[in-house]
Length: 384
Ligand SMILES: Cc1cc2nc3c(=O)[nH]c(=O)nc-3n(C[C@H](O)[C@H](O)[C@H](O)COP(=O)(O)OP(=O)(O)OC[C@H]3O[C@@H](n4cnc5c(N)ncnc54)[C@H](O)[C@@H]3O)c2cc1C
Image (cartoon, rainbow, N blue to C red):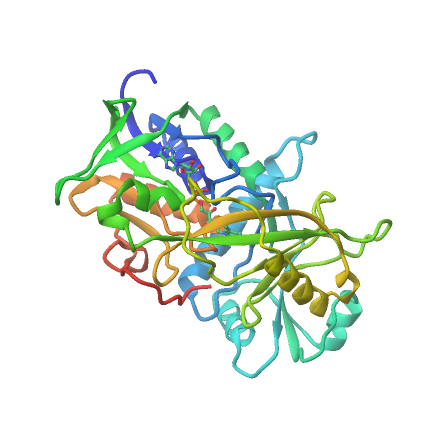
């Protein structure tokens, strides 16, 4: 650390690195503090890939945020050097409609109203373009052709490096907080107060560990697992140029095509048990693997017996509703809290950073859905 900073960002996950980069690009002197490394294996932003979709049922707020963020992710991919690995794969994202009025149908109406590119595909058209899918019970498909998958830990490291190029200073260390009643918490690094005019806490699932009085019960980390299943050798049918990512919230599953030979990734989008990101033992559960394999086989029968290549145990950092959190501490307008990604927050990192910068630097108004006041204790998931 050298001298005094305009802003200290604590946490170099997807949200923290985009905040640091955005603020540095706006000419602020930024300190980025990370307890491990950007996109490390315990972080919610770790692992290989994340879906970037714009569809959010009737939720125009998140559709707009995701659409703005998708442009930023695609811009990042376009700006990478020719010899650098991909940051974003434009595979498209496919939703299946199985019943009248379901999430795919509501999402299509929102994308239409918001002018976001999408296509409505009949089962025959899905079968023609993507013969890998079994379509029993599918009425039609909603394709987001511009959407896809971001390379998660790689892009976090990349954005951290871009933040450093823009002048941010990245330091390794774990910030401690002391909450005393309703007073602003005292934040220290190695026993010394953080030398910054404003502080952004972007600590993901560690936010309730850091500020237990304020955020305990308002952000609850849950254990989540993903599995990478191997595709047959010599077949291109499961790569990002042949297969879209797909989401099926009614069936609680999503999948990402085989990226860079790691296998098709499947996740069950159902909250697991509460967990502590520091101590969580990251050994996969065989019962969940069996369930994931069965669910994937139903949609992609060619992978019904696919072998497991890798698995990851991660955590969601859930707010009660699933709404993100971007607000200042109730006792300190210079202390900002950014998080609550709730299993869908990665894609929004560019839009979250833009919103934070507008609030912090331009005095932009709060977005009520992202406010601390809206964050109840408990769990009534409404955003997917
Ligand atoms: C299995 C799984 C699948 C997901 N799928 C998707 C998806 O397809 N699409 C999508 O958009 N989102 C998805 N998400 C959600 C998304 O990944 C997260 O919401 C997002 O990555 C959270 O980022 P973050 O920066 O808030 O937290 P993190 O990535 O956890 O970053 C927080 C950082 O803060 C650091 N830190 C914590 N405390 C301190 C401290 N005291 N001092 C210094 N550093 C500290 C940590 O080390 C960490 O690096 C998924 C999440 C999981 C777990």
